[in-house]
Structures are given as structure tokens and as C-alpha cells.
Length: 276
Image (cartoon, rainbow, N blue to C red):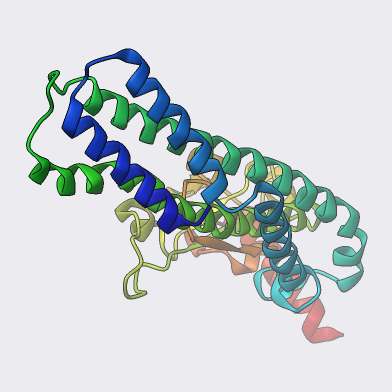
């Protein structure tokens, strides 16, 4: 069944109820059953939707792992480290595909039930004998709403899960590479992006990774900043497109995050480099 045929069926159901009203439970239930079947037939098959999901997330995976994207967010991390982490990154891809498929399935089920609930709530409120036919148009519009938005929402889920996969891959590299801090980046300047004001405030801020090697050696401190685990992660919230770049040396941190020992460590490191 095409989407147009589904809308025609929905309109027929509205016309029938406006003509007869809620004169029997059987009439409403019959239309509910027909609408449910029609919705399942009109939607993209779940097998095809899963193929699109796998294709989309696999493309994101390749863009991160098979290009220089990770090196731009993790300057200084050795290429062999990235290669060593490939199996772990692949596991994250598989985990994200499974989670995304379940989320899309749940959203689809909720959309169908929401449409049926709207129809039943409207239909059972019509008095026996019916109502004027001119009410059909606004009713049609309300009943179509949840169904019409579903394909868009399914595409948004795939895109959003791509951002979450990217964030998870970068977390894997940061942990393995012994990153000490992250810098938050927001797309708030991008035209049309529905950014969160809180994330706009985070843009460019440095967040310390709790328990990192430099902190354990007494080289760095919070200095009025926050730990990364005190806030949400980039791309963690629904449809967030923020991302992080990672810092691996105390010399990359703001001055107020360095201890006296850390400043001496930087001077000594620079002296060794100059003498080499």
C-alpha cells in the first residue's frame, strides 16, 4: 500500500464516522484494525530500514577510521594506536547498529499507536447520527500528523546515531591514548542549527579528564574548570552535534590548569627538545 492509499483509507474512515457517529464499538474497531494494517503496509519495511541504518552508520565508521578524521581530533596519537583500536571500534559500530534498530522500532510502534489513539479518541466522541461533513478536513490533518512525521524521524535517528558513534569512537581513542583534557566544540554559529544555549557556553572550554596521568603526577589541576564527567558528553543528548578535540600534553592546557610542578615539567621538556 502506498502512502496515498493509506491517506485515502484514513479519509474514508473519517467520512464513515462523520456520517454514522459512534453507533457501535464494532464500527470503530473495524476501522482501527484496517488502519493498523494499512500503516504497516505503507511504511518502509523494517528490513530495508535496517539496511539503510547499517549503510549510514558504516559510512560514518569509515569516515572516522579510514581517513585522517581521528588524527585531527587527536593530534599526536600514533597511527599504530588507531590501528590497534580497530576491533574495539568495530564492536562499538555493531553495538550502535543494534541500539539504533531497537530505537527506530520503538519509535515506529509509538507512532502507529499514537495515530490509532487519536483516531479512536476522536471517533468515540462523535454522537450517534454523525456530524457535519465539513469537519473532515481538519480531522484528516490531525490524524495524519504522527504518520507523516515518522520517515523524517527515522532519518533523524540514523543521523543522530552517527554523531553518537563518532563520539564513542573518539572516546575510545582518547582513553587508549591517555588524553588529559578535551575541548568542547559547538555548531552554534551554523545557520539553522538548533543548538542548546548551554552548549554554546561550553564552546571552546577545556574540561579535564578525571584521573589522567598528568593529574596523577601532580602536573595539572582543575583551576576553576570542570571535569568532563561533570557534564554531558558531546553528542550525548538527542540530536546534539557537538564534538570534542583532545589534549595530550600539559603544555596544551590553559595556564591556570598547571601546577608549579607542571610548569617546571614543561620547561624541562622544552629544554630537552631544544637540546636534541
